[in-house]
Amino acid sequence: MSIKISGAPCCWGVDDPKNPYLPPWERVLSEASQAGYKGIELGPYGYIPMDIEKVQAELEKNDLTIIAGTIFDDLLSESNLDHLLKQVDDICSLVTKLPQTPQEEGQKFPTPYLVIMDWGHDERDYYAGHPEKAVRLGEEDWNTMMNHIRLLSERAKQYGVRPVIHPHAGGYIEFEDEIKKLVEDIPYEVAGLCLDTGHLYYSKMDPIQWLRNYANRVDYIHFKDIDLDVYHQVMNERIRFFDACAKNVMCPIGQGVIDYVQIRQLLDEINYHGYITIEQERDPRNSDTSLRDVKQSVDYLKSVGY
Image (tube, rainbow, N blue to C red; front, side, top):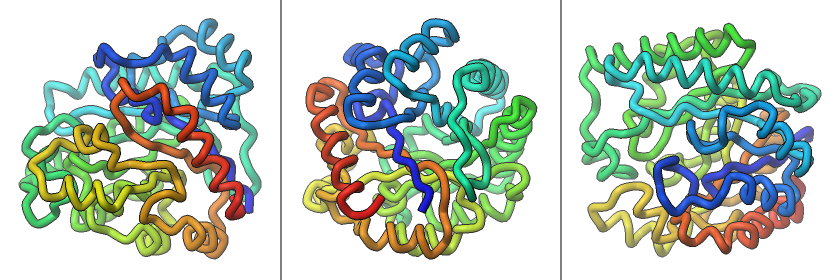
């Protein structure tokens, strides 16, 4: 099974580039390398600088490549579209000029990817994980967001970058009905899917079932694990998604509720090849334990055949 394990800055608490407590990006790359990664995501726009020479030097120093860049922003508002397109231009200009990772045999599309996620709506953030309570977009707003995703995807493809859409807890593409509608409205030739085991479970879906059902649409996968006791606790609170993460609802792979032995068997069945990125969102003020946790996740996955 040609699967490569990579990482993401969110394991160091890097989700909001304006957060004053973020660790230096150079430290994140250094610790990612120490944990055994060969690839890492860029993280949120604005965290790792759009400076090719500086970034390339740090990547080479740590024997890393960039697996994906991310759009993590409001995909709905018309007023944000120009900013979104600028992010695509900046990210794709950077990642396509950095050293590339060889494509695995059987991997559908080469890295780097552009991961597209909707974010930034209070009315959904407080109901992350609650499909029965969260307000849905009306038809007109949904169609606007789909049109924006098409525009972002087409822009990425102009750079030769494969766009993948990531359903994300707390955004307007989160729940079962929304993912099904997304797949109907965005053809596979426009963009693939990046499914995330932790977000699926958090939002009341079975990761194994969803990876199996959408195997022909999934180009890229994120792995997380969930501490079931903390999960039950935050599901009974009115709490933002990242505030739940700050309470350690996400834990190292193999220490939570998700069965990664079964998922490994499933990936073999569906013939998945390519990259899987480990994530464990946290409060960046706790990033001093990130290397320990990431290493535990990597070691666990290796121990069960990844």
